[in-house]
Image 1 (cartoon, rainbow, N blue to C red):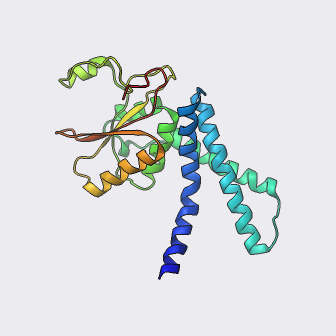
Image 2: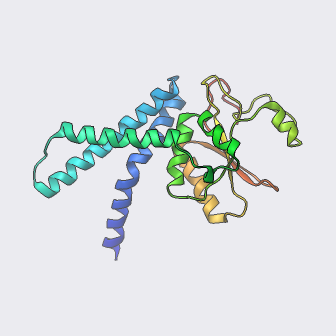
Length: 212
């Protein structure tokens, strides 16, 4: 039984590792360097490409006993990662947004946020983004005082660095796992209760490092 569980754990680890390298690697570059968003994301994609290339070499060698063309495997891995990244950046279903307006706001989110959310949606098809881009007057409309610094505003990077995910009526365990996912990836998370219960996810903004 233990051997079976260990084998399953290794399979899951192999499958999950490229996604972790893609997202966590991108966030590490974003947090520690002043690189443009595209460079940070490409850095994470590079790490994921290397991991998948190693997998292809390992499995091909295990089956045939030969290494085969390393260049071909590298190109295959690169195509897979690029395809995944492009899909995560630009394809977002209305079924995962509270309103059509929120769906439009998806493209205003920081690229790392977009890819991270798209990755999670593969595991949680019912995930709903309730808010992304905001203006100061939006807070007044909600009966709240306007915020001078909010990562829901467009930052100097050119993108919005925060989004809200619905938590109401979705179960304690599911909400815990979603929050844990974002925390492990390196995002800031806040749970806001009340009638509009939601999970606030944000990415560091270098021009507003204390903003959330």
